[in-house]
Image (cartoon, rainbow over all chains, first blue to last red; front, top):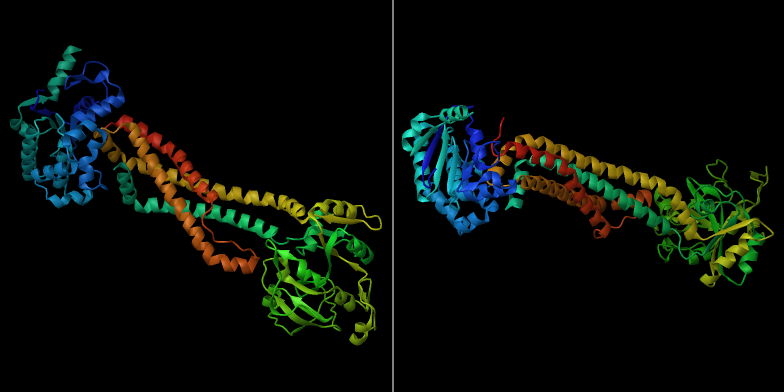
Amino acid sequence: MDAGETVLLLGESGSGKSTLLSLICGTMLSDTGRVNIAGQDLATLSSSARDRFRAEQIGVIFQQFNLLPFGTVVDNILLPLRFAPERRKRAGDARATAATLCTALGLPAEILAHRANTLSVGQQQRVAVARALIGQPPLIIADEPTSALDADSQAAFLDLLFQQTAANEASLLMVSHDPRLAERFDRVVRMEDIARIDRAAA
Amino acid sequence: MILRLAIASLFARALTVGMTILAIALSVALFLGVEKVRTGAKESFADTISGTDLIVGARSGSVQLLLYSVFRIGNATNNVSWESYQDIAARPDVEWIVPISLGDSHRQFRVMGTTRAFFDHYKYRQGRSLETADGVIMDDLFDTVIGADVAATLGYSVGDPIVVAHGLASFSEHKNQPFRISGILAKTGTPVDRTVIVSVEAIEAIHVDWRSGAQIPGQVTPVDVIRQMDLTPKAITAALVGVESPLQTFALQRAINEYRQEPLLAVLPGVALQELWGIVGIAETALLAVSAMVVVTALIGMMATIFSSLNERRREMAIFRAMGARPTTILGLLVLEAMLMAALGALLGLALLYAGLSVAQPMIDSAFGLWLPVTAPSLQELWVILVVVGAGAIVSMVPALRAYRMSLADGMMVRS
């Protein structure tokens, strides 16, 4: 992936998408092959260095249940900065940055003090985007972030996601099983292609 | 922020967390309560007699002598003859001596014959003297002074007549020589509260018509005649002794123990109390151990609560991991949570104890004669709280380590 590139990873459930994401995020190591993120071979790092690397370099958006339900919105947005001092520095005044991000994502400013479990699913997903973007990590990983949303919200959500990743000059790797999203991305990778290459190589 | 999130997470599970904290609080309150009663009982034991250097009685055991002479528990096996008493009283190293004559009772309370010197020399709770709450110290031969509990239980007031029964729990009464209550003593928290005090001469007087424990049939000596008689006692039960100088205590004790004319025993009240406490101490330690086990049970309950919460909190841990938290952070979070619960529980327990103590204090005092002072938490109590928090941390390591392994395996994806 190039910097700023948007890639869609297409695959049916059970095709190994989640495992691939775990490999990229460094919570899993592969027995063979190499995973290079931002020029860094993850296998050469210790497990705690990989945790730190993930905190600094990658913003993660899940399918759903993205937020700590008992935390406030601002607590949730600032959470990754707690584990990433570099990112914290880049974020500047973290609370102000969080507020700016929320506004940019179309969330009302007073929502910051609300508890995460009082928000609608759509709002929660947008808070998750704000959390992934804060401190400008170079790579955003989104694991089926729209599957819990209805069609209209999906489009609006994707617009915001693209717009904000572009504004942050981050690369976006999104995982989905929905081929209709393909046209919006710079590049589409299909799990079955990777799997075929794998099998051919073996 | 991690601390705040941990607290918010606890609040989100308020019900189970609250129950756990309540269990810890009750167990800590129980433990500290037992400890309070223990030290309170020990102090009130030691406070029963002070200022007396030696207790003298017939030769028996030192604990037995202490029990019957001071605590009015059990009976003397033998008496001390009046001659021996006078011999001891005449020694130059004896500053004062007070005779005690026991054996009769009034209802469930014991009657003690003594002299006016008893009121001057008997001291309790670091040197406090007996005082009358009502009336005066006895003046007449058939006057009596009663303890606060006697008056309260039987509803007596100054001027009331009372009849003394022969022996303990006996039906034969000294009906012909009724006493008049001249004074009621203020509450002391000692066995004096449960004692009817008369003069040694009065004890002699009510036994004029008695020989070897039985009333002489048909013989009733009129009170006027008794008053004219020589009522010097022939024997007493025990005596409290004060020495001129503390240095002479041991010499006097040896002299009395080696007294040739009669087998006598002299004990130091402090030493005998220690001995008695050594016996009671086993039960006391057992009680403390049981309440400590209750604290351990509450902590294990907390461990179970954390264990059962792990599954539903996998998502939460996955989020932490995705944000870059190390598995050790997850472990730390759970231990921190357990310490918060233990600390809250222990502090709540302390608060419960003091609330309960301030409510129950007067009741415990009147029911058991045990005064438990409500003072600021002692250093020892703070240590107990620290130990509970520490033990909570240790106990929580078990579920925390499991969470650690779970979050290592799960990473940021929860496979369910």
